[in-house]
Every structure is written in C-alpha cells, then in structure tokens.
Figure (tube, rainbow over the protein chains, first blue to last red):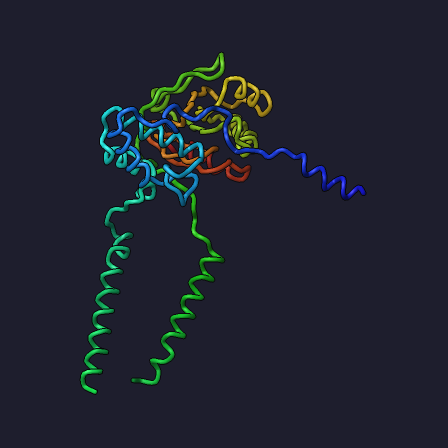
Length: 136
Length: 175
C-alpha cells in the first residue's frame, strides 16, 4: 500500500524546464514582411547549426537559443546584411562548426576527396573485372 | 588470387569493430567553445536589470585589471551550484560582472537573495544577443577578460570548488 502511494506520488511531480519564462524574441517565430528577405533568412537558417541541440538547424529547433539565433538572422537580414556576412559573423564566434556548409580546409578535405578516391577505385576495379571476362 | 587476400574483409571488420569500441569508451568532446578566446571582447552595452546595480558594457573592461564575465540566469540550476564558488572568487579579490540571460528583475533579485551576490554589475540580455556575440552556448559560462580587454579564457559549465584556485591563478597571471 505504502509503495503504491509512493508510486502514485510520482504522478503529481511537476516537470522542471531548463528554460526561461520570457516569451520568444520578437522575430524568432514571426516571418519578415518582405517575402524576398524572408526567403533569404529561411535559406540561411536551414544551414546554421543550433548550438545547444547539436544535430538540428536553427530553422528546425524549438530550443530558446535557436529562437534567439533566428531572431538575430532575421533582424540582420531586415537591416540589409547579406546572408554570407551573417554566416561569417557566427563562424568568427563559434568556428566552422556552426555552419552546415563547411569550407574546404585540412580537416574537411577528406570529406571532399574521399568520394573522388572511391569513384576512381570503383572505375579501376570495374575495368579489371571487365578485362578478365573478355579474355575468357 | 593470393590466398592471404581472403583475410582482408575480416581484418577490415575487426578494424571497424575496434573503431566503434574506441568511440564508445572515449566519446568525442561535444563542448561548444568560443572562437573568440585570445581576441578582444566584442562591443556591447546592456541596461541594468536590478535596481542599485549598474548594467554592463564593454567599456567596463580593458581598464588594466582582469575581471570575470559570468553568463548566468535565475532559471539555470547549475548556476545555483556555481554560486558559492563565485562568492569564493570574490572573497579572493576577483571582480565579477555578469550578463543575465532571458531574465526578469524579480527573478534575479530572488536569485541573488537566495544564493548570494558576487556581482559588481549585471547586464540585462533579454534575447541572448550578447551571449551569441560572445560565442557562448549556454548557462553558466565564465570568461576571464584580461586588463587589455582581451578574452583570456572561457570556462564552460559551472565552476567546481576544485577549479577555483586555477581560475584565481589565471586572473592573477592575466595582466
């Protein structure tokens, strides 16, 4: 009986949110009035990483920080900044990590080169096996 | 075909297994670090959040004396755990300024009454704008700002008791 009561007590426990009580920033969930600017902002947001929810873009994430990052992107686009300038501003603060469009560098080079190497290997392998068949 | 070639797939599979095992036992460090360490503190100016305590602007730094910049919030549980360590740092003569992320005056006043007040000033950052400008990705985080206004060190997460002497040393050495 006591055990059941203790178990039932768990039902009335309130969840604790690691979030603030402030409403989202004005432009976090509101589109810009100019459709062209909104399209620019949306395209950029899809290629920026949310820094607290590491597998999601800021366009996809419900985290408060992602909302604040969306507000930052929209505010700066509305002020006439180019999407690439905003991306550069964020990369200066968080590193290439924050962008889903990584530039070519020593660390990312294997990402770009590996497919070419694999393709070349495949061509070489296919050529070798076709040759063998012709001989037989 | 050479006979030993038959063992190659097996060796590759073993290698893959070893890689997965290594990843399981030594997971990658997912801490997001600011790329601004070593660079000047970005320009910002925040209004005060509680009466009787000034807000915070970049001008408060770069006055020849190193200071701590603590990014915190009243809704953040690790910030409560960190409070005694910040008080210990203040006791040791370290000056601490703060940025309050997405907070209200009442909640901050309550937080300071409960957990102590080590801050010389607190800036009100309602939309995390200064947090993003700093390259910070959560609360709490603490930056050591040198006397020349450069970011010397970023401490991600709450400051533990055993990390206090190291931080004091960093502040003393940052001139």
